[in-house]
Length: 110
Image (cartoon, rainbow, N blue to C red; front, side, top):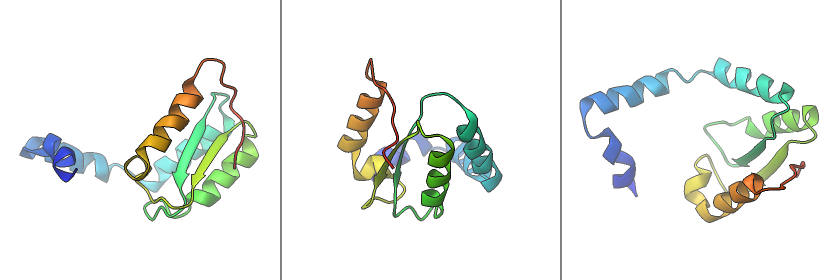
């Protein structure tokens, strides 16, 4: 699995781009995204791992978003960390497929 992740970053230019992307991630950007999610009417589904150490306050953030957006569809994965798509790919795929299915009506599940 590591080889698959590393493959796109085999040369110096690609590694520099990855580093640049990582360096541009700032907490203020997450605040901006969170505030936008509180006010948008776009149907939204959030899936997160409760053991996420990269976003340690994710549970509090999602709880605040759910209060602001009763239509927010929330799925908590208690036994997952940050890379939920790696830890539970089949389950994540099912959630995404259901959310994007014709006729789906988002609802809060927090």
